Length: 229
Image (tube, rainbow, N blue to C red; front, side, top):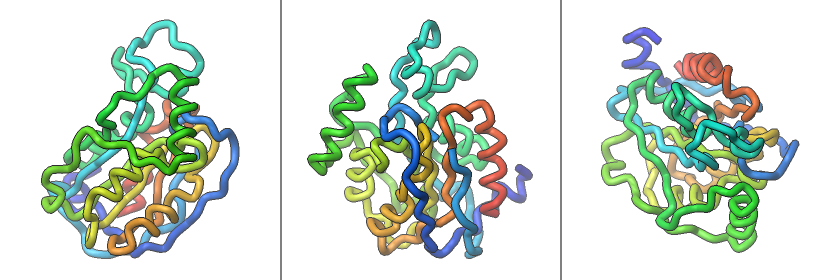
């Protein structure tokens, strides 16, 4: 991306919602298939210094060797370092636009064993729980635009992301969503976030990528970001 594009790259949309249909597996651990959903409409460009990339990602291992199928599905290895799929997409966005980064983490550690994590995710969803977060964004007022990334867990946002949305005041902010999944697409999460943040502009042109396509993520993220300009 050219420096000109980086400085004024994001012309953000009014919130026309595109709700992706539910398809494929409901299990967690897959973080991404569909590309962006719908065009965004142009508003004022922003400075990357006032942009934040926040993401929730739970790689099921930090060992790049001898991964199980589930562990490999939840991760992407870069230069020998294991990243969660959503974490990797967040880093690609950060590198492309020069934004700040914030990792959404629960106060209590989550299990990394796939079956336990999957069961806990479903239990939290069925109980409509709001897990306590390790930290909140300390300087949200410094940002005009917030990218928010998450894996699809059981056809929905992970419950810690609901906590994140509800415990911050995103009024007047531009919200850009990105997601990774195991076959579910966006699963209607753009619509859910739009309903959750009525005083924000949630861009309909969200990004989503299948966990099996992570090797092509860099190019797909670049094309998506360019489509927002």
